[in-house]
Image (cartoon, rainbow, N blue to C red; front, side, top):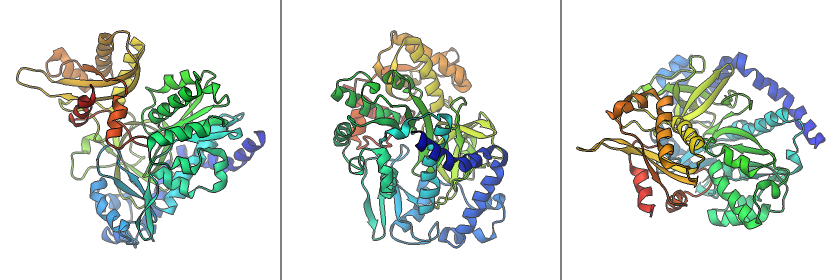
Length: 502
């Protein structure tokens, strides 16, 4: 153990020093990323169309290249999928990460170049290890295996020279074989398509292994953990894996799940949050005593941030890390060595520190409730739910919320469809605490709730056990990186769920 940790510390020394420069030299580091990518792509189709050779500054870049979402950028990706080279990045792109996300039912194909794979995704994984071992010099993590729960789509060909699959499948396919000594399950099981089959085989494969760390999305991991405990006939994870010490999580807000994981690990467990997506690895929790995740500035990603008030503008004004402010919700825009240019990823972030730059994920650009001018974001919802669960002893398994629109003789409100792991001691207290907490964290919601004039109190609808799992199954979205839409400005999702809530 001491030898492995010492070896990691030797390799990590220079890297951690570079990360330490983010606070003082962040602006310069980002400028270097920007200029490198611009120069590299100047002779591509995209670079020629947008006059990269004549761009001398960020201002030129912002004027020449529009901020786009996937739908507007997809024509370039479609050309790449058909086999065309030098479209948005030099050379041929072999890998495409398939991601449906939660904002569009249509699959997205995100180009994954070798540069973004090696210098962004894999570098993020290495930095997680460096940061954790520095914080925990006596860690025994490398005495056992890391149980990684990734996506469920196998690699498949899209043209004669390119393939697509979940990002996790692409990464598994490119991982050096010797690293499998530290990971579980086997690549064959990790890449299984069918969630239920994968659940059974991971359980059988890992029950008798020494698992020291977990990595994955909290909601899906919880399903796997409960299945493992049921099969093993145990009450907690330390009865199965006594050396388990770390859960690396991401993909969704961890707040509703934190206490459940602590209860499942009575000897204690460390948590480390990451922000990674098919488009790149963007942030990691570098200091457990600080709020938020450190924005990783030297992974080949150039960041821009669009205030939410600008999203309706056909030419939204963006700012770089030099000009961001704390407490403001921004849509994150990226330009990457994967060939994405001023691409709006769909997440909203909020800075909680500017020296260095640390962020929290506050929501999604298309997942919020603003039917009455209340502008409720996912971060608001999570904070309010936490207060409601603390007041009533409840444990939330899954939820979604949507507006109930005004009718001639009926007032509008929000409907919260919640599946409880443990019911509240008092459902009415849960509802009123949720309402009050939302007013405390969101002044727009508070104004609309004033004397019930514009917006009535929330409606709480209790979901049957297994509802969200059954709904995700019906949509072919079990496991991996699939997420339940938490908030919606329409009733599309909640009405589908309510039909199954019988």
